[in-house]
Amino acid sequence: MRRSQVKSSKSALGKLLGEASWLLSHAEALADYGRKEEATAELARAANCEEEVACWLDAAGREQEAVLHRVSAASCYEQLGHYARAITLLRAALSTTLTGAYRRKIEQQLARCLERAHKGLHRASARTSRKPNAVAG
Amino acid sequence: MKIVEWEIEDILAAHPDLYLEHCTVMAVALMSRHSISPCEFTIECEGFSPLALDGETRFLMRVSWAEQTAIKASRVWRTEQSKSILERAAVAMAALLFAQLIPNGQMRVAKQGDRADYWLPYLQCALEVSGTENHREIPRRHREKIAQVLSNPLQWNGYVVVCCFSESQKLIRWSYHEQEI
View 1 (tube, helix red, strand yellow):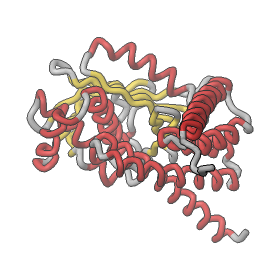
View 2 (view 1 turned 135 degrees about the vertical axis):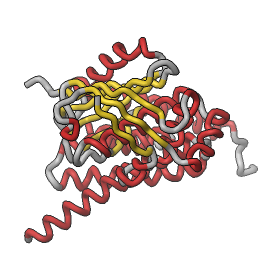
View 3 (view 1 turned 180 degrees about the horizontal axis):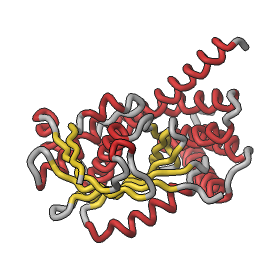
């Protein structure tokens, strides 16, 4: 890769990191103001952006920072109730070398998401089984 | 003791990677309860001294605000819980200190579980911020935040900012901590 290309990819990464941070703080502000629908939409954008940031950081060899942003994306998805997505990201975060305390925090978050996903699945199954048979004999 | 005076709205342009308007409004909501603009804080630095202070570790910071912000702030108490107002106001104060006194002190945020973690990416430092209205709580809160900042997942050094917005004492304890090698 030429020097100019390295520089431009670095600044693109910096820009994306800044964008993710701005979206997260904006989502928090909207939630503070009680604008729930807008906050949810902004949080979803922040989650996507954090996920992308994590991939770019991985590609740049900044693995520890990538984990931080992957967990950030997972935390957004968890808040949005998208537990399956959060679980995938948390499992990916746990596949790298982490400090003991941080690993424990992520494991706790993963256990919480798994439990909520399981409850969601259970509720969905209960709803399906209560429905009357649509096909008459 | 040195005295500095800044406008709280300065943080909006100083931290392009954060949306801080609501923090500004909440800071004014707290400050304007006991003071007219500007509101005076005593700042105590530990473990470092900002370059502009020529080695001093205590100074007075007068924080002023615009009429437009005061109008928005007057509505805050009707809609917000006091805990979240305190937290956001403390973030605004930290943002002001880093913007004015620490070169490359731009802040970013990442979400970790239920928490918002603040970072100073150009300084490779973590940042913990806390707000209280009870000055007796400052030492305990400060100890807790030091432990938290040093356990950051990137194992970076860190800053702690604890802001007290009590009627009798407006104090900010601002400290820098290094990881033990």
